Amino acid sequence: GLIFQLVSINQSFNFNEASVILMARQPIVDLLALKMGLYPSLSYLFLHLWLKLGLHQEWFIRLPNVFFSLFTIYFLYQVINHLASETKLITQKQTIFLSLITTIFLTLIPFFYNFRHENWREALAFVSQKQQLNSAQVIFAHKTAFAPVIWYQPSLTYIAPLGNLNDDPGLLDLRLAQGTVGKSDLYYFPYLSNLTDPSQNITTWLTNAGYTKTNTYDFDGILVDHFSAQN
Image (cartoon, rainbow, N blue to C red; front, side, top):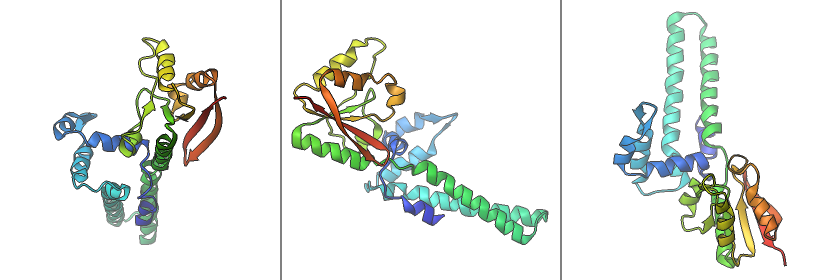
């Protein structure tokens, strides 16, 4: 269990993890009012206090999850062992085998769910460098910046043009036109665009405005399309 947990403990936060961390940074009063179902989420409160320690590296923020997961695995193993011994329905060897199989499944499920690899850290460092070098503009297929952007590059300049389009569809044209004035290099994140922009209105606008997609960079699942202005 420890090996599976530690393999990717220092990799970039994915979208879900960054969203949870930003939520946990809220004041405790707000977190107490936050409910997951019918009950306040103690995990947010714990993470809020953990972040107060001031060490914000990925491995450190994930450390409590590792400890809690290992404790749960050990506890479940003991429960299965105890129940099997009490009921006498299976042999000791079968008990050990069942406990190990259950433990492996319990170990793998959070590994695949929580540590889904999305390398936002490098993708955002890449576009931030491009922005500093040649004032490139960054575009997200959303109405605001994604949580990893706020965590890794809070000072990044970007366009997120998809807010309130039901009220005024012309806002898309206006926001893209204003945000790309004088910009010859654009870096577009199509993340979740199949949901937020299924008609590909952003890329259509860029093409009509004279931009050509010249390259696509893949940061372990986070795609970044480079658009360059045609001469």
